[in-house]
Amino acid sequence: MDRDASARVAGLSQWRVNGTMRGMIRRLHPMVFTLVFLLLTLFLSVFGPAERSLGTNVRLVYLHGTWVWTALLGLGAAALTGLVGLLFRNPSLQRWSKSLGQTGMLLWITYLPLSLWTMQANWNGLYLTEPRFKIGLDYAVIGILLQLAILILRAPRLASVLNLSFGLALIWSIANAEEVMHPTSPIFSSDSVSIRFFFLALLLLNVLAAIFLNLVLLKTQTKLA
Image 1: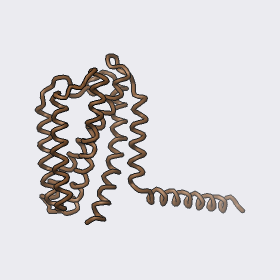
Image 2: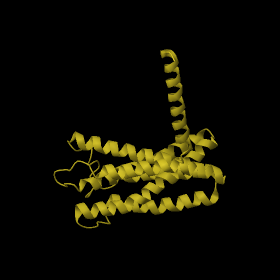
Image 3: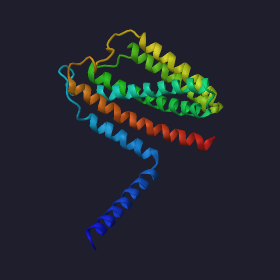
């Protein structure tokens, strides 16, 4: 076999291998990717850089912070797609608003026990009246009720309205919350480049997990429709 023929055979073999791998990836359920990125987030958080005053306990702050920010991004995206879906009367965007709202709410609810753990580790106690935690708890209860209403009524347009209202109210409440023990931006006020870089890397993994979780919920929503 001449050199050109060998190259063609090698190229064809590589194309088949790449095609097979792409096919396997497409067949994987989005939940697999959700779990992979969540596990990577949890694993990476263990190796976060220590901080002068909090020591290694700051790793809980990294995880807690990225979890909250991912939840806020999900709820903000639900509000935005809901607004655009309403303005343009686009049912597809309204369905996206519904699934993004569910994704953001799941992350918001699960951040609360993580917040309690972070409090205990760094403040040596649970300060349940801390304004930002109280906002988180109040909006978790309201958000659960709204998402239940959305699931029961099965009205994408209503989901868009509720997600938009919830997102705006939450952003306004956080922006006007009193700062007692929780600084506005403990990570980005740090002088350490490694801390900021690590936080962003962790946030990226968490956002990727949320994206695939949203695809799972969107897929489930489409089947039930």
